[in-house]
Each structure stands twice: as structure tokens, then as C-alpha cells.
Length: 254
Length: 75
Image 1 (cartoon, each protein chain N blue to C red):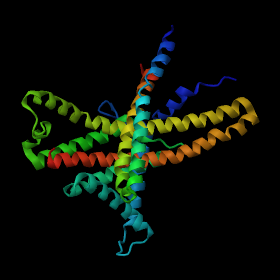
Image 2: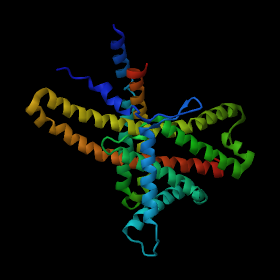
Image 3: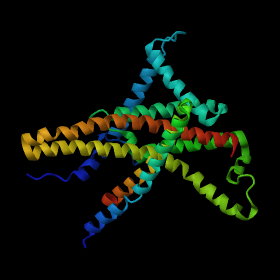
Image 4: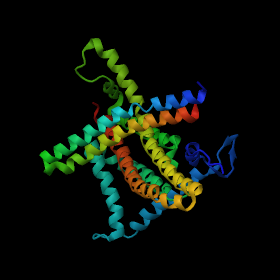
């Protein structure tokens, strides 16, 4: 029998299935597996948070405690990296955090599609952060925000160079912000798929002996699952941390 | 040499940056451990910055991975 090369096969998990084909003014707006995963995330997160906070008590129960923990965690992160004034951005970044985190975690369940493994999704979220941060910057500092591109105390003769470098690095922010989480999730899913395919390939090719040997990659895969959960937690956290640093720049300049 | 052969060699060469990432990760965790060893009381405060540095460095390695995939499957 012929065994398909597993390299391309591992990539094929990121193909998007169209569930309900739709078209609007000549544009393809079909309801896809990606949309379904996002909708699931919104329903799960929204349902969980609404249910957990349906009657708030001064002494919280376990469920309320868990919801409060998420809230406090994001709040602490933003205040630590963005300063006290960054606290008013909490609703936005709390939403980002739970959307990315639960989206990735729900995508980790078997068969389910992971929408954060597509660069366009994370990039769109990063652009949203970028636009919001710029809006904050011009609202609080006005045109004085442009001072950000020329740090005080720069000698005049290297000023043009510094401005160009600062501008380029500023406009690369949303790209790196989106790419970071996308690359991590992509790499993790490819790794899991490779291990899974390897198990199947061993069993297919060598029968019972292969099935026994497949325990090793299976164990590695289970370990990888735990690593992936950690990676998703860290990456969502990093997303908020870096956004908070941007907010700090926007509110206070350099 | 065939096109596919060149492609595999290019993909292999694109993983060279991992050398630098490995050095950086070693330095991050080494310094992290030694600073916790010097001041265990401040270990909690170091956690956030340490994880931040780790994730930023890891992302560089994953960029190399993306380049490899682009070479293998997209170009």
C-alpha cells in the first residue's frame, strides 16, 4: 500500500471547509468552519461569563471566583505593564484575551477547527489593537503624539535616521503582534498532527508491532497537548502584555 | 539539481536562525535561574518579564519555521 507523505498532509488540517455558501455583492461571505469556531467561542465565553456572574455575591462561589480570577489577572497585567491610567482599556483587552485564549483552547479539542491558526484572523485582531491604540494616543496627546517618533535628547544630525527607524518599527507592531500568536499555534498544531500521523503510519505499515511501537509517539503527543495549553495561555498573556506596553506609549509618549 | 532538491536545501538553510534562538533561550533561562538563585524573594516579579522574553524569543524561531513552510509549500 502507498503511504501518503505526511508533510503536506499535516498542513492540510488548516484548510477551511465552507459550511453554508453565501455571497454578498459578489463577495464570498460564506459561513465556514472558521466562522463556526468563532461563534462557538463567543457563545461559550459569553455564556460562561454571564452565567458565572448572574447573581454576584460578596463572598463568591467557585464559579464566580473563576470568572473574577480571569478579570483580575488581565487587570493586574495591564496595570503592571501599562500603568494605572491604562486601566480604562480593560474591557477591550479582556475581550481580546478571552477570545484568543478560549478560541485556541476550544480549537485544541479533536476535530474542531482553530481559527487562531490563520494569520488573517490574528492579524485582524492586531490591527484592531493598533487602531485603538492610535485613537487613544491622539485623543490623550493630540498632535503631540508625533514627539514619540523623536526621543528627547537625540542629536540633530542623526534625527532623520531615528525618525525613519521609529516609524518603521511602529508600523511593524501590528504585524509582529499578529504573527507571534499565529506562528505559535500553527507550529503546535503541525507538531500534534505529525505525531498523530506517525502513530497511524506505524500501525498501518507494521501491523501489531507498529501499534505497540506507536505508544511512544502517542505519549509524546499527550505531553505536547499539555505544552500546547501552556503555549496558548502564554501567548494570550503576551498579546495583552504587549498591547499594554503600546497603550503605555500612547498615553505617556516615550 | 532538480527544483525540489534546491527547495529542500533552501528549507534546511532557512533553519539556521534556530542556532541564535537556542543561544538566546539558553541565556534567558540561565540568567533567570541565576537571578532567582540570588534573590528568591523576587521570583514572582521576575516571572512576567521572564515569560515575556521567552515568548518573544520563541517567536523568532517560529518565524524561521514560517519561512521554511513558505519555501516548501508556497513558493
